[in-house]
Length: 238
Image (cartoon, rainbow, N blue to C red; front, side):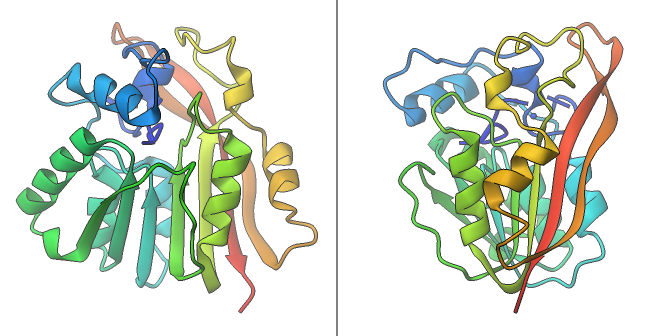
C-alpha cells in the first residue's frame, strides 16, 4: 500500500516510489471503500507506475549497513526491495495492493533475486509488527487512509534490538510547484514532528540522521524542480 505505500513519482516515474501521485500524475481513488480498492485502482491505471529505481535516500542511508533481515513497508512495484536483495538482504516486502505485489514479484524474477524476497499483502492499519528486522524501511508512507503517526510507530515496533529504522517522507512545505497536494499537508511531516511521534528523546534509540534533505525531481511536463524529504535514520539499542 504505500505511498509509495504510494503517493509519491520521482513516489517515481522518477526515482522514488511515490512521487507520481503526490506530484500530480496519478489518480488516488480516495472514494474507494477500502485501501485495497484504492491502491489496486491506482495501479490498474497504468502498466507501470514507478521507475523501478530504488528511492535515493534508501540507497544513501543503507548502502553501508551490514545486510541481514530487512522489512520494506509499502513496497509498491518492488524497486526498493529488489535493490536491498541485490545488496545481500533477505527482504520481507509488504503492500496492500495485490496488483503491485504481482508486478513486484515479476520484477524480482527478472532481476534474479526472487529467492531473497518474501512478498506479503498486508493492510498496515491491521498489521501487528514483531521486533525482528535488522532494517525497517518506511519510504513515503503517505495515505489518506493511514495516519503517518500510526505508520511510523508501527515501523519502529518492527525493528529488532540493534537494528536500524529508516523513515523518509515528504516535508509538508517542501513539495514542488506542480504538486496537487499542497492542501494536504497533514499527510506529511517535519523532522520535529517525526521525532516527537517516535519519542526519540526517551525511547531506546540512537539517532544517526534527523534532517530535511532537498532533491531534484522532474515534473509531469518534464520540468525540473526541488522537493524536500524529511529523513530519519536511527538505531535501536540492543
